[in-house]
Figure 1 (cartoon, rainbow, N blue to C red):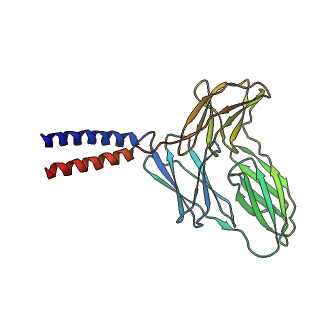
Figure 2 (figure 1 turned 45 degrees about the vertical axis):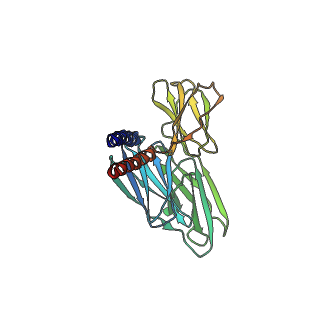
Figure 3 (figure 1 turned 30 degrees about the vertical axis):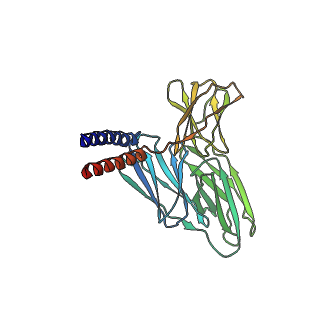
Length: 309
C-alpha cells in the first residue's frame, strides 16, 4: 500500500514537471545573429528596419550573439564601435528558426602619431555612412554609432579635407563643407538628415511615452491594429510626432528584452499639443523551469523511498 502511495505521488510530480517544462517555451521561433570581430570589448548594436536599436552587446572572445524572433520586426544592420577604432556597419539577414547567421565585422584602427585634430559629425540617423572628402576623393570613411555620431582623427599636415558626405537608405544624401581642425582641437559638424518619404500635409502633435527602461522600443498602434509610429525610450521618454489628420492611434506598446511588454491606451493630441502617457515595464518572472527542477528532485526522492521499502 505504501509503495502504491509513493508511486501515485511520483506520477503527480511528473505531471507538474511536464507542465512546467512546456510552459517555458513561450512565443515565436528564434534564430541567432552572430557578430564576429577581432576587437574584444567593442560594442555591437543590432538595428531593425525601422532604425531602432534592438539590442546592444559586448564583443567577447571574438563574437557577440543575438537571439532574434523570426516573426518579429526584421533586423537589417549591425553597428560595431570601440575606442581607438572607426565605427563599422554591416548588413544583416534574418536567420530562419534554429539557424545562425554569421556577420563578420572588421574595425579599422584610428591613426596614431603625427599632428592631429578631430572632426566630429553628428546626425539624426543611426548607421549613416559618412565620407570625408579631400581633393575630390574619400580621405576618411565610417558609420555613425547608436547616438548618430562619428569622430575622425584628421592629420593637420596631410591633404586638406573640404567636405563631408552623409548617406543612408531612406534619407536624402547631404554634403556639407568643413575645415581642417587645428592640432588637438575638435571641429563639430551637425547634419540634420531628411527622409526621402516625408509626411505630406497635416498638422502634428506629440505623444510622449515615459518608461523606466532605457532603450525600450515604443510602438504606437493605430485603430486598425497596425504599427503607426515607432520610437525608443531615451532619458526616460520617447517623444513621437503624430499627424493629427492621419489614422488615429489608440495604444502605445513598450517592449524590452528581459521585461514584460506593456500596453497602455493613448489618445490623439491636437495640433501643437503634447500628451504624456506612462508605460512602466516589469521584469520577466523567473522561468518555471526552476519549479520543474524541484519537481524532478521530488521524483528522485520518491523513487529512492520506494526502493528502500
